Image 1: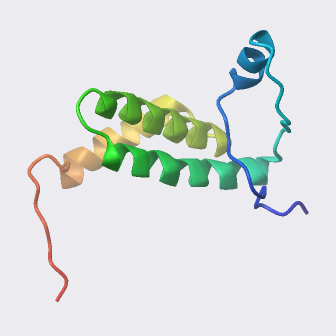
Image 2: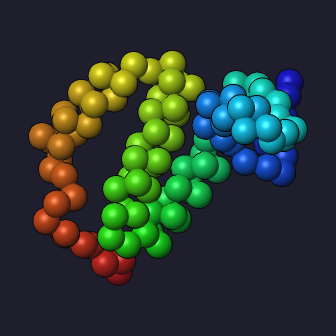
Image 3: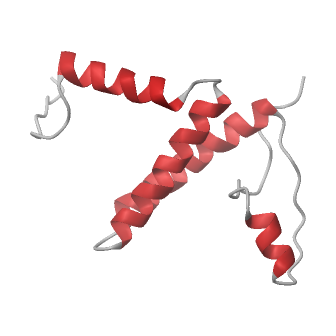
Length: 108
């Protein structure tokens, strides 16, 4: 079994290898196993969430888009269809609500 930790480095978007080649740049890239991809996606999820937390103004929409792309990739990695994920989110929101009103429960 492959170690799920892909090691040092970072997951890049699918078109990055092509874009780098077209611009004449070279980088050492490799494809990850499904387990390593899943691990790298969770690392990327944390990275993008940190970037979103630091974003201001128009940067927020770009960082939200990056975060959404990582979440979609995680759904694919788990073998889920995106419409099913959206339906589950709508169902949960109907049953328990969303996070729009800002309710907070302090720890006791």
